[in-house]
Length: 119
Image (cartoon, rainbow, N blue to C red; front, side, top):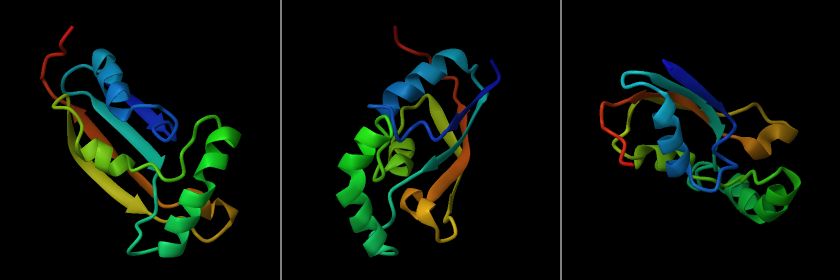
């Protein structure tokens, strides 16, 4: 296929690199993976939110089917396998609300490289 979309999925999977490998099996080389994911707050920018996310994460995992408030998804994407190349990653903050616990978000695009999958 030419592309795939991940929306608020990477917070819940046990291993982001395994997810990216599975997606690489179905997205053709040159294809695109579009994503929007909530991620852990940066401790230097939002220390209170960062602390709150870490305190509430064990409850969130149970209440939200494995969803982690403090997942470092952007770092995992930047360290991803050679199967994907980052085209764009942008960080956005939601306006203050009850949903602030799942802020900030990252959105962007990965491009499937020509690297062959190993069996």
